[in-house]
Image (cartoon, rainbow, N blue to C red):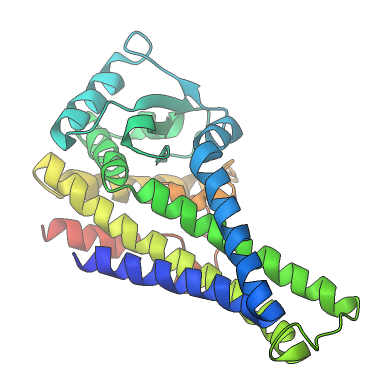
Length: 283
């Protein structure tokens, strides 16, 4: 319940930043433009994000004949979660990871890398799939897509402000704060939007962990899996292996595929693995 409230509050803040930057750039007219830009980007993200991300990672759909154990595992978890059976994909990547995508439970997909299939026990893999189905059941995919596209819309509006300022736009009927408002919007709005987006992502990871523990009857299998995933990712990084993961989709994975490339926890898409494990062991 606390996570749901926190997510609603953060989504409201994100929308407020988008509308605020529009108002600063062009008064009432800018506010209307900002609203329609955000709405358009959310529409595109809602309908096409799953197809784009699966194609980006060259994910291959597998059926019961291709991966019988994995398919049966997901089917059983979908039954426990009382959601439709999602499509199942395998990604040709040695980095151990997994994610869920799709605009709603009726159009969802779960994807695992070849690396995760190699290092986890069946129980640990099932716990990871439970986490991903938790995202599906909690509609975190939609929330994450909206948050990401909203942040993108804010950055685009900030770029518009930069070009308008460089071209010497007359602000007499534009931004209520004139050039000062445009400069502030350019600098602080994208940073604020990114921080809010990342906070939403971290909150939803905790919620999906809790759902996985509920579906598995214990938090221990997922805690064990997270420990292995972190160790596996660190070992590959030491060997010079670079995951194919992109920053724009890093928030979708069960563990941060870009760990080691971020500067601080504030800018991380995921909560610390140690904190997630501690919470799971306490369930």
